Image (cartoon, helix red, strand yellow):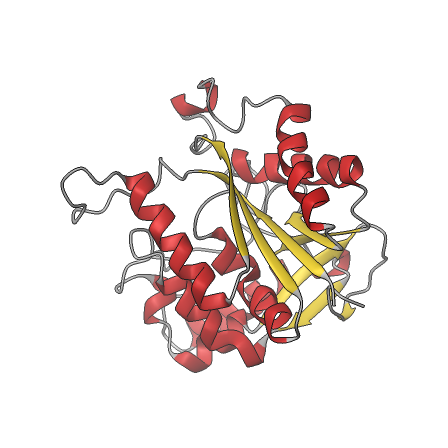
Length: 267
């Protein structure tokens, strides 16, 4: 059995991007570790915080619940502040992940990779799926940490842009809202960095089947109630539509080559 370390930018990213892979790895007997770069302090602030409770407190509890749902063995926080979206004032804050020196942040992650003897690390594609500054930094820091720690396999979690287009066209044809809160949303639209969402299918290497774990993935997503409400996109999708959209997770192995194939993080 091996050890999988999943490196994510914010609380809730683990559920959406790699929740199925994490649950599958646990079920197959592998050790799974989640590392979150930031505290998510610039997310949506719910109106039900208790006296003295901060958004960071709530999001930490939600992430702990998500980890329990998926069976994660260890949860670690790198300790950086959320950098906010592109152009936000928080981009320049000294405590933000975006401003962290590359070697410093990479060494924080590398310490965990060495402690765990990690066999596999997941990070994000080159533009963090949708251009969020913290997601892009996860890509850079993750790859550098793998070099520092000697981690042998690195997979970039991404979204299959062509698959999303097929799914959302089908949803529109059925009269359903095809995207998160926006009926006009299109995967080809410019994301936070001006690039389209995700990665074209022609550039992917691994199609990972997590259909047997999609219920756990959805339950993990629902743990993040401060950001993903009962009225939100992820909660209101019919189960069959959710399974179709999220029963596969997509990766790029920079040591591999397209075209995309059915594969697994432990091969």
